[in-house]
Image (cartoon, rainbow, N blue to C red; front, top):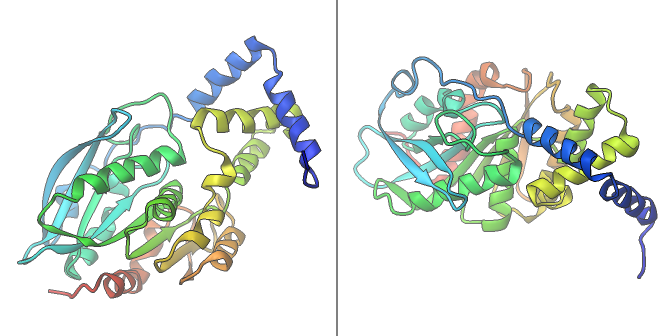
Length: 303
């Protein structure tokens, strides 16, 4: 067997992680499951009626392959007379569909239908033992599959929009499944391992032994290697245009991540805005550019 430089150390770390005493591994597993289950945020008080604007909305439910029940909302332009191009929006960790509702009005006015949904463990969707970036992507795939049969939308003209972990999920889905015309990525991180390392550093968890064991066990729990799901490694596989938006004052994901993602893009651009990780207050001044990007690639026309 030929080992690449640094592989000896990586192999030793993995062996140490797996050789932890069984009681310690059980404790670690329980703590990680608790940590991988996000806090459930309630929808905004006015959701969904207050967010609708110029459109018709209906609620529907999606059942996924894991047995998860996903609450979803479809908004269609009021005067639509034919199947409309569709934007499917995916919220971030610990958020829900209502946190992206500010985009409903501008997208509907530009002639695009919009789907917002709650990922499992979020909003009004069912509970599971943990959440993860791959599970977010699986939930997105289930919603997209359900929409293929909806006559009000044009399944040939679909774009994706995601925030934070939701952005990572839309990039992962697009890289693996394709079938979308454009992507808007808000506050995406470059690599999940780096996000975990930053979190452990903030919690004063030493990387040696303990940190390595945590990283290894998280990958076992979610069933994916970090390298295989990292947005940085997915972008070169995505053929459609991608618009990256990132806050200049983001304290959760550094701006340097956005520049690394921009360097990996095949087609697209980076827009740095005046804002933090949330981006909701920062999107309004740039809504026209964001909507224009999606309308161009979906061939949508304002009513």
